[in-house]
Image (tube, rainbow, N blue to C red; front, side):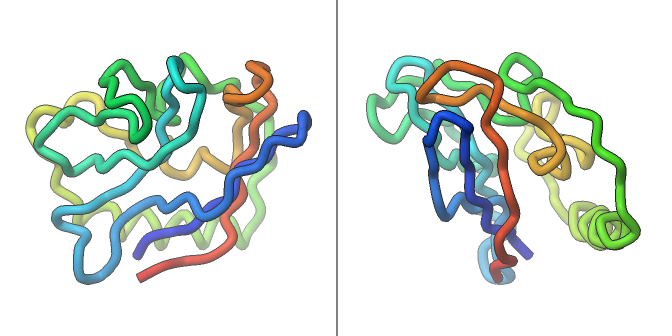
Length: 141
């Protein structure tokens, strides 16, 4: 089961409908995750299951960073709620079925990274500050 996020920053930047994880019919070949292109300064969805390097949708550059990359993430302290703990338990079980292509096996997001989109602040493509937040708005299938 995939998830749909929205990203927003204090500067006013927003990006809607960011898909994370594939659906029931395509999870073996399609697993989107948000990426950042420093050249274009955009957020786009890169397929973590692709056999090819992930490239920017706008300029085609493969010099991109995933939002699970520590270079563009600034951890924030957040207390976990019981509901969040239950969501994470379900997500942990779902993520166990993923098998990753060999070329990204060592750089794939781990469980904590996948769950950390809502718990951290990230580099905003518009203002360049670590003030971008992701919010899960729905599940997709």
